[in-house]
Amino acid sequence: MNCRIDWRPAPLMVAALALLGFLAALSLLASAMPRPAAWPLALLLLGQGLWLAWRESQRPAAVVVFTATDEGLAPTLDGRPARLLRVNLRGPVAVMVLQCDSRRRVLTWCPPTLTPDVRRTLRLLKRPGIVSPSALPLVAG
Image (cartoon, rainbow, N blue to C red; front, top):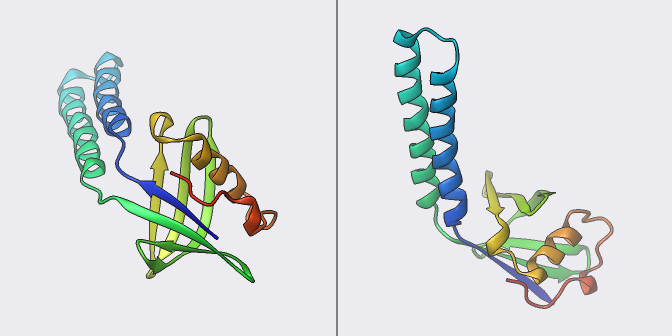
């Protein structure tokens, strides 16, 4: 039994990063910081937000497949074996942290990109010790 979850950079997440940089710059300008120091820092914050948004939009798409084995679930990331480190569900946002080839990969899903099957799968994966392989849907995402 396999469970497949597709990930792509979400336009909503990219826009949120750019907006956070803009709001950080505005809040710094609205603070009591002296203007000669506030303007360069505000520009730096705006640039950082735009850079983070650009970096997020350039991330390659990924495919996570969970295969049922005798020991439990064996995840693969883009066809390479991986180890599931953590799954967090904070409201409508889901975060999965995997380790593959000694590198950590953080995958984030926001509300419009999550189907009910994917949300159910991620909720079940949040507690890997409790999940039996037969509890996962055949295909998610």
